Length: 211
Image (cartoon, rainbow, N blue to C red; front, side, top):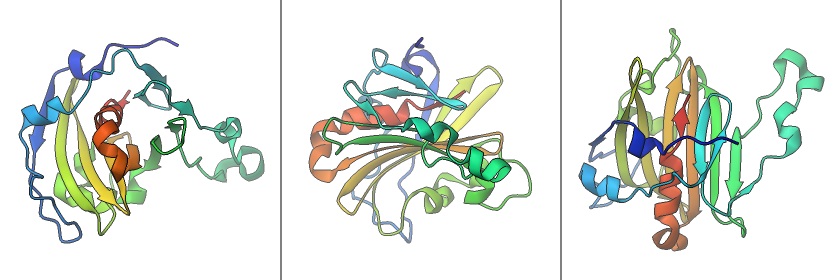
């Protein structure tokens, strides 16, 4: 399968940090960091396998295994026809012991927030702070939030990045929207393993690109 150059090194990226104080989240005192420190927490993923899904691509850490079951690709079509239930994951990969997982899900944006017009960018779901109520579970400990702007041929596409801990699971999540669909990539691992493997997992999540 063909690959493309690393999205972080190839395209112009702008990071805007925010120190959020959300009613449903408990921020760490060091949540506010500058753009340079965020970039230092992202590895070069150019050599990683690049998976192409339905309208997105993502880099997969070395030695991660594909967990997407073959039947997932057509799940429910023969039984439910036009009302087929969407498959749970658009992509799912895991470490050999299954403790670290990289997943991508796709959902209609109007299921996340009621809108009368088709969402074309994640900003249509609200600001970085407002959208956190959609993407970050209540009671989570929030470590970092970022707005990521990627230069494309017709302008800029915005992604929201959230890093948080809930129930001893550390999560790096990136979300973007295109043509009424939200594409959400999440990399998770036990909090006890994040110090060792967090760079790899965060980099995998940030590599998600809407095509």
